[in-house]
Structure formats: C-alpha cells, structure tokens
Image (cartoon, rainbow, N blue to C red; front, side, top):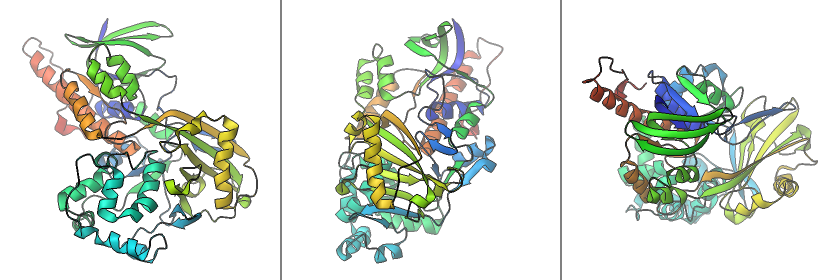
Length: 475
C-alpha cells in the first residue's frame, strides 16, 4: 500500500480548487474522481455552433484571490466580460420589468408602491438583529418590508439558488447582508460606509466567463504541475490509520489502496455521509440530512429574427407569486460573444428547484414544452427553436434550509475529532464558483498547517524533513 501527502476525493470545482491552491505551494496532490470527466456539474458543450453550460455559466467575482488564480492559470486574456449596459429583468405582474440598481432608480421604478419604497428607504431606522437562524423571508421583511422580498429577493433566492426564501437561512444564503447588519446595525449604512472607505468591490462585482466556456477554467486548474488526477475511481472504503487515512477504491485496472496523511472529501453531502457511516454515525446522519434541489437546465437556440424582445439584459428571474414554469432565464448570447452562430441567439432556462421539484419527473418532451411555454409569450418568440439541449441535475444545489449554521457547527465539531480529515463541498460556504474557489483556498491553508506541523514532529527522527509553505505564504 503506497503513501501520499494529500488525496482529494472528487474533481468538481471544490476539489480542483483545493488541489490547485496546494499545488501552488509545492504540495503534490492526488485527485480521485468517479466519473471519466472532471469538473463535476460544470461542463461546456459546443454543438452546431452553440456553446452551452451544463451548470454555472459565469463567474461573479469581488475577491482578489480569484483574480490571482485566473492570472496564474494564464486565463486573463481568455476572459469574456459581461457588457456593463445590460439590464436585469424580473417578471412583474405578467411583464418583464428592469430592476434598478441605484437608490434613484428605485424611487422611479414601477416595481414597488410608494408605501413599499418608503419602507425600503427606512431600512436604516430598523433596530435589532433578528433571531438566530431566521429565514431569508423573515430577514428581508424585517429590514426592507414585504415588497422587497416578493419582487427582488424571492426571485434571486428561488431562481439563482433554487431555494425557498421561507425556509432558507439568511445567514447562510445572504451572508454579506447579515454581516453588514451585524457590523453596522443597518445594511444601508454598511453599504455607504464601505463605498466611502472603498472596501472591496461591494457594488462593482466583475462578471465574466471564458472564450472556451467555464470548462476552460476547470482544465486550466487541473493542468497545474503537482496535481495527479485519477478518473473512473470508485471509493469503497475509508478508515483512520496511524499515519493518516487508508483509502480503498476500485478502478477499471484493479484495486487501488493508499494511505494519505491528509484526506479531503469534496463530494456531495450524501456521498460523504455514506463513506463516513461506519466511522461516525452521527456525522454521517448530519451530512445525510442536507437536502438538494433538483434542477433542469434547458438550452434553446433560435434565429434572432424569431424573437421580438430586444434581449438587452442578462435575462430574467421569476418570483414565486408569478407561477411560471421557469425559475429564470439567461440570455447567454447577450451576455457573451460566440454563444450562438451569427444571426442566432441562445437562451438558457432553469426549471425545478425547491419551488417545483416534481418538474424533473417529467419526460424530456414535456419538460421542454413547459420551458418553452413561458418564454414564447414573454419574449415574443414566433417559432420553435432550431437547437435544444437539456441537462438534468437530480441533486443540483444544496438547500441551506432550517437552522443551517447550527448544523454546520455540529458537523465541524465532529470533524475536529479526526486528524487529517477535511470536508470541502458546496453545502458549506456558498454554491457559487467564486465561493467554491475561495473555500478551496481555506481548505488548502488548513492542510498546509497540518503538513507543516507533521513535518516538524518528524524532524526529530528524520534528517530529510519535508518542506511545506507556511500558511502565510499561500499566494
């Protein structure tokens, strides 16, 4: 049985990000993936001149760490920026209405009543910080009133995160807003202070993709020197070992058994739960209790002349009260170039989620009909699409429902009992590509701390002490 310093189970964005940050510090990493492809749900497909994304289609960034990673991967010149002049739409009373992004715009917008606007502007006068574990709905109603929830926040949470604002925990789903409230007593005051002090890019997030789609990012990270990726690896068992962890797996070429000093489980919560069931039953049950929303992604290509809407925005989101089959729709050809052939356009719709989980039980033809039915009236589509592709994710996104921070605290408490074991999945720390990369860096820092400590402990008995970067040197 061979030994290694770090094994990461799962070659999705979380696992690859952890591996990439480690590799930058000279730590050799093995990434074991059960599928023949890497990237998890992130997958770019090019067919008949249309470029579509199976899951995440773009990256919204305000973190300098992500800028550095992209630069180190040599992807700066491959970035495709979203045009600054694109509108953001929501479905409101059966019509698509643009969402204002300034206080002056809110004052003029037909999305809210005069009473609703006054309530939102009075946010700075709201005192108190709410109950621990309050839902998104409770939090937004308390701070801004019900109209802000129904018109803006509900579509974001339901459409972008496939979640339910009545069940989703505000601290987990809207951590930046909760932080502003906790720090300044008011979200409005926090935004103004950060703007005056120019802290981070609070209102200037960089939105982009890549010439080759999001898979270009995955491939660039995986190609970093020091990362060894093994595909088609089925993990059978993990168990603690005096030198770390034993990992037993099957491959098309036979059994694979290895001891590793640091083990990262970058798999869906239910998969991690199964692997840990014989080691820590309560930890396994906590992970197994995390719910996922099923999501269908419908890609449709049209002749541009078939659509009467100007498509002058990023797309639109749908609030629960509007009862549309879609949760949202992205106008990919408006966002980025070369997503469709010349004279064509690509529209990507999202169905299912916590709002309509049963949608994924429908056969393809009915699911496609449901998706197209909502688009035709809103965008003035006069014919059937010339290109259709459907991606189904039965465990699409984790739902941060209930007392979620308390659940994560219990998980971390159990995890602290096991030396060298790390969990890094999108069920903790945010589901976006930006946050997965950032959480990968945090996990890598923890691993380097452990390896550095282990190296010091071994120095008394070995003249060849392994050298690892200290955490402060992690890019």
